[in-house]
Length: 80
Length: 267
Image (tube, rainbow over all chains, first blue to last red; front, side, top):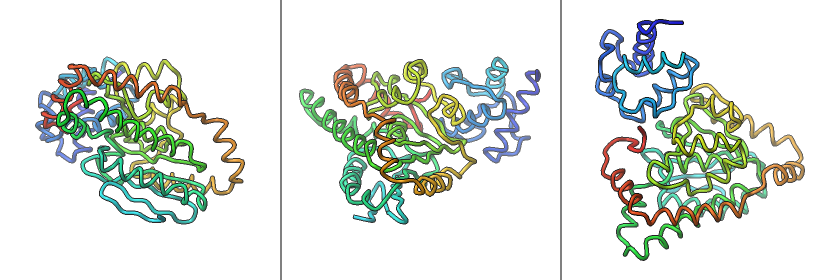
């Protein structure tokens, strides 16, 4: 099973690729809405990418109040 | 009318396939203009279906297939009416959309929804009218209505119950969570998942395939395997209208209308 660090790195990579933002501009504690400049609708695309990549199901209500990559990675980790 | 281009949608018929294209910014929210144009479409369908074997519903909008009812319009129209007349106003709208839905559901054609991105609420219900749902891998399905103190009102619950198990129906409705295309396929809602941007092409290929079959057999099979739950659909309208009068709904809709987020009813 990947470590939380691995998962966080993968999430940063997925977000970087999908939203075309250089990965070096993204940090684990960044607010992804602000750093990526996305709204809740675009965040759903990231959720779909995450579900496909990690082959998990992550109900969006589990992400209520989550806005940083590290906490997002923790939620993913709990489903792996 | 073989071809039509309106403010919110257009349709054309060629080679035995009718294509209904939703195109209203930002994400095909269904308000009074959309409804009027959908009514025009179902009126035209009577003639169109004589020479056609398939109907494809899709949208070119980047945000998705359809985000559902235009709740901002619904709220403002409702607020403009005296309180005693609000339920009658909303009932009229919902009953009209049910007539549109029932016509598409019963059409003697193979109907295909080619969906992508946001397929929420009324948009999900529009897809459920169709015999087949072809979904782009980035499509997401959701019934967020309970978050506003309402239930789906475009025929969603009876048609979901028709198509998938009640346990999944409860999960989708009671949690209001969104699911991706793969999950939707796994639960039997989506017939094919395509690559990104490929749903319409696959829907067209599917429409070409169904053209090979005898039309009479297709119509008979459809009647047999896709009964329309008229009694439950009527019940859904009644429950929706009953819920609509509650102050909690007015407060939920006001909160939605005042929000500047793209999809404020999401977590």
